[in-house]
Length: 255
Ligand code: NAP
Image (cartoon, rainbow, N blue to C red; front, side, top):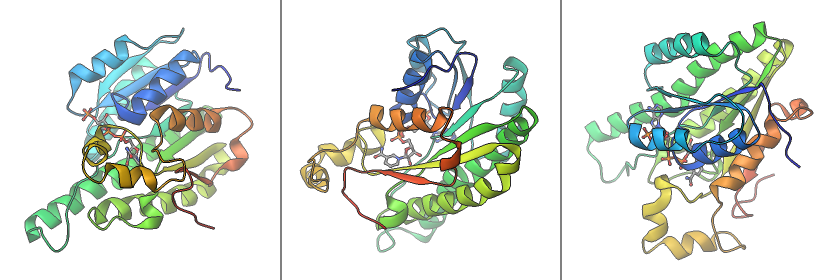
């Protein structure tokens, strides 16, 4: 059972499409105020915004989270419009291929830098401002979208795997530091999910093999990930802070 979030404000980075869009749709239908961000694709972000239902006040902001100054400016603007932030879903991320045996040194460096700046440093900076604000308002929740790749490795996308492993470690550290302010920090680690990020791989020759990684013979839907985020965001789940939940259809087992 999912509960309503009336009067609660939920920020979903990269909410314009994919998993973030499904989160935006679900939280909007549960009557939260939903803020989505995008970096380049304004048209898709506006379409997503226009189709959000529920009783909340929804907005879209442009944010390049790989740039620390953008994150600071974004919070200033966002908190002028919304007096409180209750839930931050750090969903935005990139998945750049850079096979160590194939790419030039320039590409290798570029992709490491972009990936770490977006998937790890950007999230750290978003957590910095959110936790300060939430602490002053009596608490809140941070939900970080990680990946199975943090545990299983990503031979063709090594910076991605490292960024998500770093995200897990950071989330657990922050869960300890922020508990006194009643800010809980949760992690969701999906395997393959049907989105733009994976559409090429899923449509390609390896598509069937990817589905077969799970004994359910499919990948996750964006809605399945969104439902887990809504559970974490619900009252009564604060004590799961620091936890990392897999959503990979038993495609990778860890203890
Ligand atoms: P997606 O469809 O590729 O969408 C990515 C979103 O992030 C878009 O809204 C994009 O904005 C935004 N974004 C990209 N770079 C950004 C930046 N520098 N600053 C701010 N926003 C930025 O992604 P997805 O597949 O839904 O994945 C969402 C999250 O789940 C990611 O963290 C990903 O690592 C994780 N995940 C995905 C899968 C999967 O199989 N899809 C599996 C495991 C984990 P624009 O629309 O403007 O480009």
